[in-house]
Length: 308
Image (cartoon, rainbow, N blue to C red; front, top):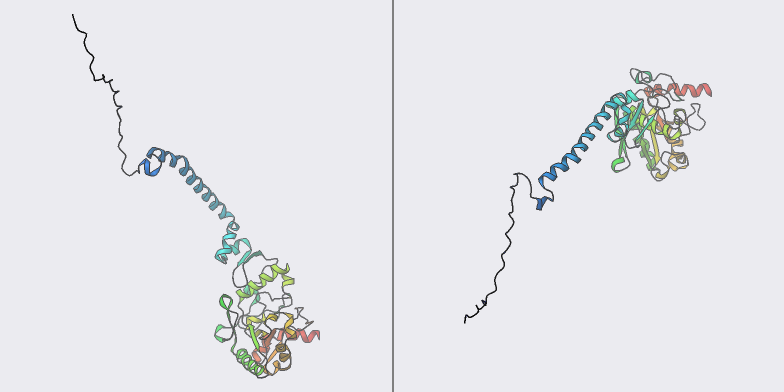
């Protein structure tokens, strides 16, 4: 009898599926791998083409159009002028003046065009009797004739004030005489050039709304006694809150000046109800102690005599 074949103790293994073929593509040199950059090289190229190139092209077109427009309209750059200071070429084309300094920065159109240097100044130092809003024309002092008489304020606002030598020496003598009587006289503002006076007058014009109204508080450029180097604003060192204000007229320094200033050649330029129409300025004094100084202020003094 035939015996049945016995089954093997080992199970028959099922065939394994073949492994898929993986194709590896080499990376171009100069590109980061996708694992580090987050984008494949082709995706990065597409991103640059779709986003950055249009943005750069649009920015270039915008800047070009703005540049062409500014050639015909320089006032486009006025905001920039406020940051970089005064631009003379801009003023000549737009009629606006941009100032920056200790008094502040303002860009405003002048309600009345400022006096030209030819109109306001004579050769030499003799003023022409041409009043402007109540003020007479004065030429600037020669810098060689000036001396430092005081330091005013601190830090960035500090100024070293100057006067003509004749007025400066007389002022120092007057300050010392007042000190012996317990009075502390402090010079606040002496010589001013045309540019500084322009800034001050522009600020007052902006504040008061017109050049005529501003001239009651500060002289137009070319018409300030401070140009001569013989005028000085004074204050009381023991009442500094009253500097350059009518309240200075109530201080001990002002009371002393009304009694003794004439001894040293100084007189009040703008008393109350003066015929020039300038507001009362108890702090503003001018030196008339030499023939040259008296000659400079003769137009204003002649007007006082004619009215009186």
